Amino acid sequence: MKVTIDGKEIDVPKGTTILQAARMIGHEVAPPAMCYHSKLKTSGGYCRTCLVKVAQGSTANPNPMPKPVASCRTEVMDGMVVENFTSPEILEARKGVVEFLLINHPLDCPVCDQAGECKLQDLGYENGSAATRYEFKRREFEVIDIGEKIKLHMNRCILCYRCVKVADQITDGRAHGVISRGDSSEISTYIEKVIDNDFSGNVIDVCPVGALTDKTFRFKQRVWFTKPVDAHRDCKKCSGKARVWLKGEEVLRVTSRKDEWDESEEFICNDCRYEHKRKSDWVIEGPSPVNRNSVISQNQYQHLNELKVQIMKQQKALGFMDLNKKP
Amino acid sequence: MQLTNRKKVVSNKEQSFAERIYFPAIIKGMAITFSHLFKKRPTIMYPEQQREYAPIYRGQHVLKRDDNGAERCTSCGMCAVACPAEAITMESAERKKGEEHLYREEKYAAKYEINMLRCIFCGLCEDACPKEAIFLTDKIVDAHFERDEFIFGKDKLVEKMEQRVDVSKRQTPEVLAFKKIPGLKHNELFTEKLEKGKKH
Image 1 (tube, chains in turn yellow, purple):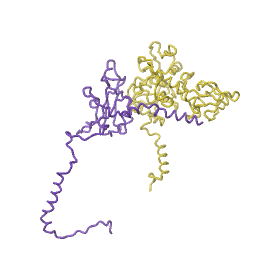
Image 2 (spheres, helix red, strand yellow):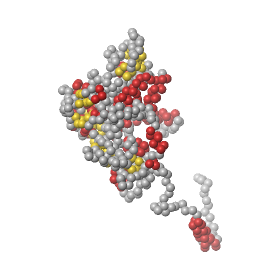
Image 3 (cartoon, chains in turn cyan, brown):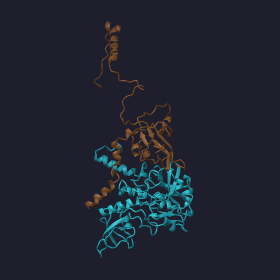
């Protein structure tokens, strides 16, 4: 099936959603997504950040769709024409969505452990307005512990349901979900029932905001002062492939590896995540890929060669002497 | 081979009588010294007398408290990441119940150190601070004999409630107005995309 997204055409199999097709083309057309997670079934459709405009439904029916559609839940049709960043209407709509997501979200990024790798922070920075128009009191909850290792800040939750899908699909015997409805819905563990499952720690990784955070890493260090490396170990429960965040020789935390869309590649078990905090426990493969624009990439020199080539080009253009050449 | 044209041939000329007794040269030297008594002095008597400072002089840092006496710093690390000299380090801790009067936020800096030998007093930490906690003051950093004495901890940086530090000069109305401009940097990406879309 042929789809055109922002003027770029791609051939995709039947059943692909617009979001997946856009991701196949690349970052320049892919809409942002908060609640969609590629490894979780039936995720998506809650947050509305991935809204796109369908300018032409299909070759058979060339009429546009009347309203913006959620690209994570809409499957492509042959000859569909989609507008994302090229449509001012969509950018305006997305700005509105971000404003809605931020209505109850506190502005406590300086305190929050997720700051620096938070998807809502990126989304707000790229699509939101600088100031809030909301004048009422934000809803407030007490910070609670879910089990021994996880902290829940319900204030920060944007109700993306990703953690609920993890509890449903990855772990057996779901122990937490969303209770109440509409404005008063909240993540609950059936009255603070502890999640003691081997894979429960993955709810931290899938949380796009700082609502679910690792208690063993709580306030230890800001993420941009730690160095992520890909590492593995022999584990009976999971693949053992993880991302280890180092500060000097110290392992500050262990997370799953994230792909280019910031979604976990493989889920890891709690044993790997919480119990192995020594560098000798892990076989380090090398530095993890970090986006050049991310604050985590400061003081990291993976892109050094790329940078060198760029500088050399500039110097050549300016007529500098080649200092690397031997006389 | 001549390398320069500044060579001087040493003469072995005999000194005259006036030169030999040195007296005229001494008089000449004394006259120069004496004439300085009547000229304007370039130095001042420092601790008693002080030169005029720029009102926004950047000297030693202060970590401000709020009006209730709670520390404003929440240990977010923005100053440390902004610091070009990497002079700032910190360790954070969680506020316990009953400590609300000591720390403003849920998280606070248990340890906050500035290495004054590394610091270049650029003031970027102040710009980066989202909590208006760190400011540079007009106090000159004291001299010390040992290197480790230049690592200033919270004992030296946090202001004391008895002697609060006035930083209003560094928050000029222009600075305050600048901080309030909506969409200065944050909307850049969005407007860029929007304009691109319109062109399309």
